[in-house]
Length: 332
Image (tube, rainbow, N blue to C red):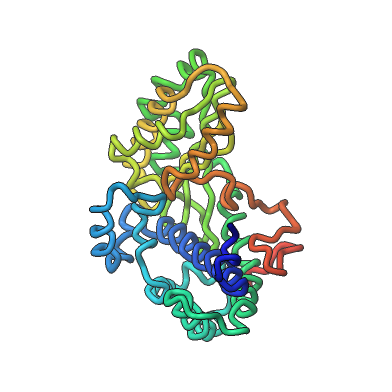
């Protein structure tokens, strides 16, 4: 039975849905920029969430996709405070700071009404939708920059470039040809820069390292990949696992982490990918798996804007709130 038939006001339902879009996006953006800036130490910025996170851990039968994401335990006001403290990381992906800060008092009142199940003000929905429209350009910049990638030059001095572009890591030397010959699996290492990063775009804070594994006619079991990376203690270095299709998976690392550590993590990830791949491709089986992958963990991304939005995906609307992006946004 529809919720409105049970007495839930339709205006409130619409407001809840729009607020979910807004807050989910801001949390997602905060995660990406903090990971790019601080690497595995990103959680230092959200220590206030730990007490609630630990309490939720006792309810193991109620675990969800975001249980291990400390940002998911912050109140909205705390999330805004994190953004305020590191504004330079978020400025290109939000809107003018004075306007952003001025908007927060009204948005927080709306959040309180939602949290206490109070009826919406007649202008609440319009205020949220206007904010979503104002966020369209920044969201496009944030996600298209994630997907604007390049192969780092072989002259790079960092351990990731040396190990996996020049191929000097022991695991690369041991497995590259073997993986191609025995498993039909190839890898590609590319970098991307966050909107706030500055040239030269070399390995370091603000740079993300994307390692794509192409499995030919084999299927990569993403759930088992995630479980094995967790067992090996590598998830702390994994920014995201991007799921393209049954035969392509990308694993992203942060340039803010030690390059030697990340280079070794790439090697272990390569070994795991070989182990969790299997011959053949069944579209029906893949469709079921794809749905289940959405429920693994907040770092596993299946058909989200982070997988899709690129410089040539215009015109586009990420929130469908009456706005969108028709031309490449200005970055000034």
